[in-house]
Image (cartoon, rainbow, N blue to C red; front, side, top):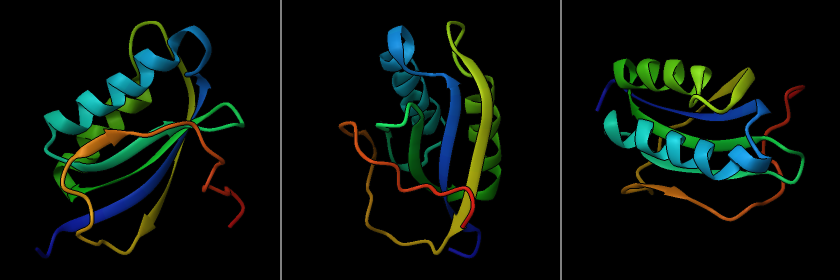
Length: 106
């Protein structure tokens, strides 16, 4: 698929605490709506991050949705990095909290 793209994303703001389940669920639903594959999770540093893959048009809509977030969240910043697409995922999953894989300086 020529237009298959994959990104690593990191969302900063009020996306954990009381809204953590809401935000991850929102992210998963946004990905499923756009027919994207990948995962998201909370990080130990207080962000939500993930990998997502799909076509460019769907990716653009997904990024717009997660930048806005659900009603009870306050997104400050969405960072993204392009990755080499691969076909490992077959759905979009919510994973357990883990260390961040996203380093904004690299």
